[in-house]
Image 1 (cartoon, rainbow, N blue to C red):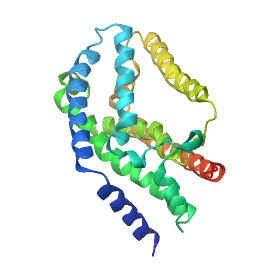
Image 2: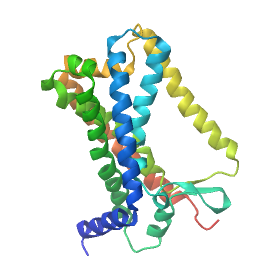
Image 3: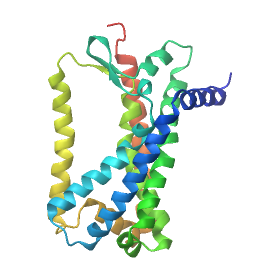
Length: 249
């Protein structure tokens, strides 16, 4: 069986194994994200809100960009705690026991990730643009593809951590997990707050929107190149964890 056929079967297996209610829930959450995102974006683009509100919106917007794929993924395909303080995707352990080559295994994890991520994120970004007067005024229709590509690439850069984390890790002390959570989210909030102050309350998302309009081709191209480079790094991380983690704990 060739590589393409294996990937196709893995994709179909996960799609069929995911219950209908999961897709319906994802569709409902995407509709909510579009509604509130478009409402908040109109105020955000006006620039008449406090730095705290700007930072809050930046956080929510990036959160949606990063976590869109996980809205669709059924629990057996997500990273979760198993016995012995091992945090891993149960489906990944199953795949490790099959004759699949490491190359195919890695490709399948990212292929599934992007299969959920790209359509979902495109719908959310397009919906927010369609229903936000402020965003449509800031981004002419001719620049819309560059706005879309820039944010899509930005989300891919960050959300690549999910497939990369599927091999899992062993945490004897749960405080280590909380340390990483606080470090990542605390660092993100601190960065976005500082960025808002340095840009006179404009915010990170506003800055990316501005770049996609003022320098559309450069911004979109740079974002795509950075996304490709980060994709390669995430693949290396997945390979590293897959070889390192002992699943017989």
